[in-house]
Length: 147
Image 1 (cartoon, one colour):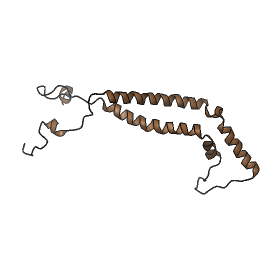
Image 2 (tube, rainbow, N blue to C red; image 1 turned 60 degrees about the horizontal axis):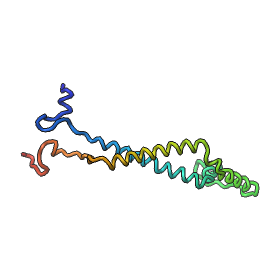
Image 3 (cartoon, rainbow, N blue to C red; image 1 turned 90 degrees about the vertical axis):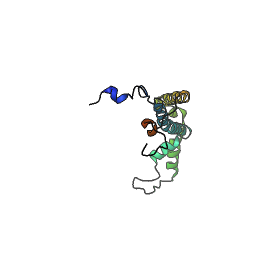
Image 4 (tube, one colour; image 1 turned 45 degrees about the horizontal axis):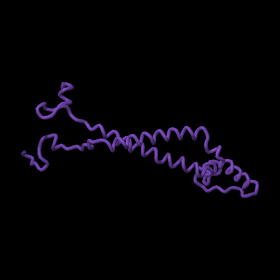
């Protein structure tokens, strides 16, 4: 069985310990954070600008669970009820609830982490290494099978 030193070192006269690419994690973390932060920010801004869409979609959906289109009563009483619900949701006190502030703090923290990863990626001097089997074998790129 091979030892740890045999596995993680190369020939000592050629190179020392293998150099791993530590900056790739930050590129990956930044990409994952972008996939989370950007849509979530859009969702929060959308709900702040048009809060009545959420209550309208929940209480009076356009389609049933089976996919058929639903029609609602257009009487004056029903229209007033819908307008009252929309007016209630448009109040600023409803928009800035405790849950909103918790989501906002978490979202700001994620934006901060994204900024830190972006700064780290821009300041990293090491380029992301690519897999090059020719350099591992110590031969040139255009080498023949016999070489």
